[in-house]
Length: 240
Image (cartoon, rainbow, N blue to C red; front, side, top):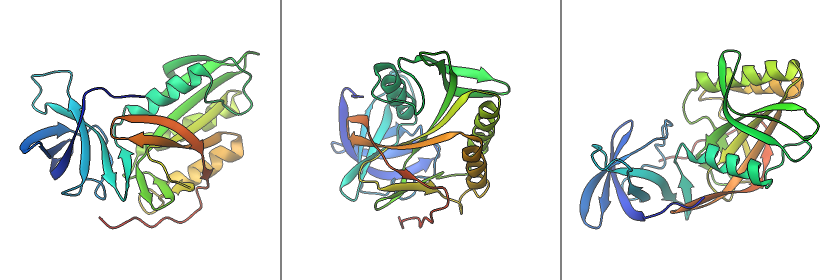
């Protein structure tokens, strides 16, 4: 996925949960942060940051944040990116869901029971499926983890996928790791302890968990390679 009209500046400071002050060509501008994570190790003063003009020129934050540079690589923090790259990959066949027969029908934003899931569809022989995507931006070296902040919504999605699997749907939890150079991924249990056992139970019920890295630059993000996912692996958060 390519972004147009991208500019690169430097982080000055995070003003609020959704607003970051950025130095751009000698000027100070405000940029909107769509990612709801803590991002404390990314939004560090002086770090490179890629931004683009917002669609609404009258918005108080005239720019949108796309990615941040750290430790020689770019980390995409656009919260819309995971769904968009998965949607494109499901439709063009570059992302294949295990045990599904191609081609797939793909329907975004589907409500089932009391949950809204990112994707639903059926495979070539009529097997119905659901998928939920989660963006991952937290990493330490070659190890990635989710979540960066407590997520009761994410926990609810795991329970919904488990129930759907038990009722005959094929269910998938897809972690989109929004950076490259990752070997494995886990659940950050110190951040949200309830999620790991819920995923263990989901896997036991047949829910398939995928973790996929991305090729990321200041102006693009594309799905790359699957990596090991193990919710029981330890994780140590990097210092800001």
